[in-house]
Image 1 (cartoon, rainbow, N blue to C red):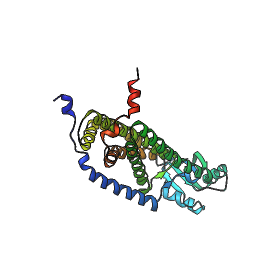
Image 2: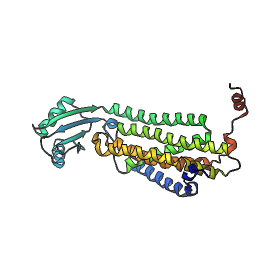
Image 3: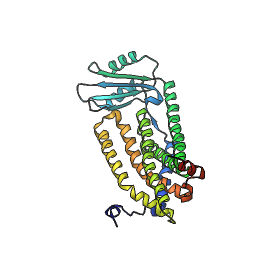
Image 4: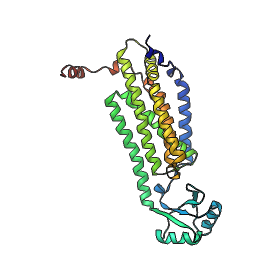
Length: 308
């Protein structure tokens, strides 16, 4: 036995797929329930409204600022610290006055020592268009991936990869819904990045599964898939760990502006790594993948034979 073979682990991933299926089913049920009852806490990018960043020379009390805005009929104003206790971010619902007049009114309410750093306005129509376009972007991405994997491998692999991607997206959205973390355009970008990351991990596993199927004879599909998962495990762990190190740095040091982005990617990478091992492989195994399904057709064999 070679040294390389000794280094390959022998974890029985396939044997534990029942527990994984139960866990995924519970995770999906919880996510769908939260999304249907709580919904997503949509940011100003989708709902429309005004975002104002202000700075003080000293620390401020958020409760007092909320009370001041509430008395001035700025109902449901969202006020939070932005990086430090003397910088705050105010999110207001769509207003009938212009951004310039709104800034002047906020200065009068909060005091002359307030420094207006940034004012952003998003109309409700624009927010609605962004919501629709964001949903379509995820849908088109999944359709494109389905077509690509079906041509690259086989339709069972395509269904397995799409199942894993839908699992990852719903789980990530469920986290944002359950804990009411704000969902804005940066988070949507992170969701699309999660789709790409999870697909890349799944493709690596599928490629090794196909190679093992074609290079062995009369071997149980469960053993072949288990072997492929163990052979790619070190690569999966290294990729996930190095990615998580960068994301943790963004989460703790990146500031409030990319906080949601970092959270979405952290959750997505963890769930994506899990799904590429358990969800995608369990799906193709449940659909009865065999060596014969991966063998080239007679037409493909003739094309290969005629190549120089």
